[in-house]
Image (cartoon, rainbow, N blue to C red; front, side, top):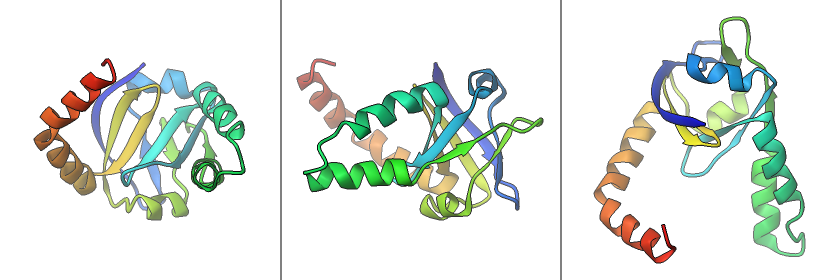
Length: 143
């Protein structure tokens, strides 16, 4: 289970240290892909397989499902932790999420999200201001 918010630095070679508490779960392999809202999604290999299977079963006759599957699947990259617990983020993913030096890694139960620190601060501030409305809508869904 991934939870919490962690600040790390991206080095000049595109390497990012993964929080120590998550490294064990990611040793078997992991996948980073284009996420939503300006971040990257970071999955264990097992969680990735579950998601990829669901995406592969979406109807290809619908343009929105094709577009979403392309975003997630074609945008994905296998990553491995090095001996220092770092992953290398490919250039195309760093550009997609506009990652600079300061990074926030957020735990969202079955995945991690990788954010540029400034983008995260703006997103978080906006979301916190709208938290009442968000909670009300989730209540309608039974949450």
